[in-house]
Length: 266
Image 1: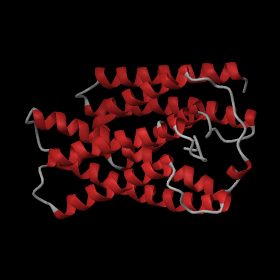
Image 2 (image 1 turned 60 degrees about the vertical axis):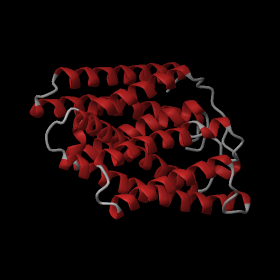
Image 3 (image 1 turned 120 degrees about the vertical axis):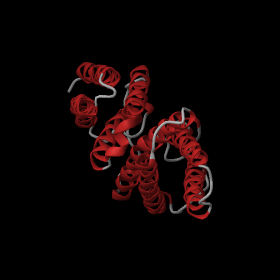
């Protein structure tokens, strides 16, 4: 796939997010029609993103993981895929689809503004543990997104004193718990890769530090959820949204503002 065709495919995918969001808004309240329409639109977007990622991968002969454009493009694919699977398995996550799709659309526009010039991967990146590390990180973000979106929706509903939200609340904590497992595996795989690449498991560089802070925040929140059962639900939902913001800062901000040796790998 040529660079021009890749960009055209990406533009079509971003437009697809807009169509999915429009369908979500127009069909809101029609439960039997909303999700089938939105998921169908997102499936088409996923196919377009798959073509863009595969085309770039084949053309550059390396995974799209190093530059900010690469990271945004591959995350658009993984976030969309994980959300579709998660919402299919946990229907309570479908209610926040407008928030999820809106976020993905913004991410897509951001991707279009970045330079698509490729950079060669260092030799240290040729390691199977890196692939496991990156995959776990992308699944982690993919699970955090619907968890945070659903938590945000619950906050809005609680302010309006609307109906029972127990199913959505349970979905938030289930999804965040699974995200925590993926984050933990990401740290383990990353440490093994770092030892293979640089002869050390951990160096406390900026990305490693902020990744650990994110992991620690999730661990503390999940512990508080179990320990302090009388904690107002809105506190937990607010914390979930804040943790997602921290995760985005960690994975899409810190690697490109620091001198971390594995810059941009997520």
